[in-house]
Length: 230
Image (cartoon, rainbow, N blue to C red; front, side):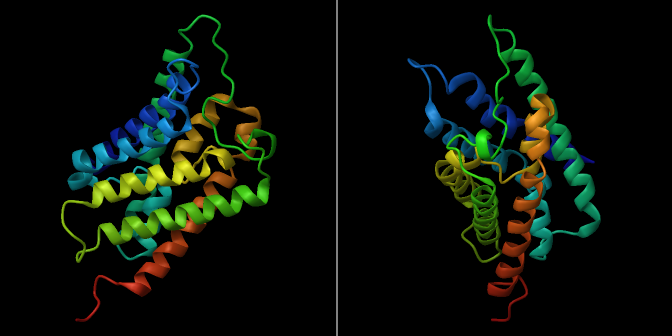
């Protein structure tokens, strides 16, 4: 239960910090942090939570990460569903709080609410195939970094930094394409409030990250299994 509570609050922080920066701080001409600032914000949420709850739950904050770690032989299958539920609930609470804050401004319009999308709902107008490939590849590389940085032979104490910087880089690359998901919980939480098109396109932001994560788990398990003989 402690692990699930940690995942709940960790994913809550990721969505509140990352999506919150996009909804509340990115759009102001004079003060806006832009997509670079949003990218950094997402990375910072992971870095801060890695050191806050990494020793409790492993700091997955993401159903795709949980499944990728399972595929890589680092996580037990019996715990996947409970982790995913905790992550989605934490993300949804964060989206709810973000909605309350954002709607407190005069003239509030929900707009995209930092939801993920493709086609006309892609920030750069990218289509379905581009979005699918982008999300699979970005999640694949994210899991490669996670599996490598947390390997027993990796330098100790730096995993959080490597993973947070990887997520920052992923956002710098892919915000124009899909508004960056690589995380089904983060996508679900925003889509629930936007509804309509966001719910209709949500399937891609579950399927693509999970495919990328599983592929990464298989590849990294082959490259450097924890049981590798010296």
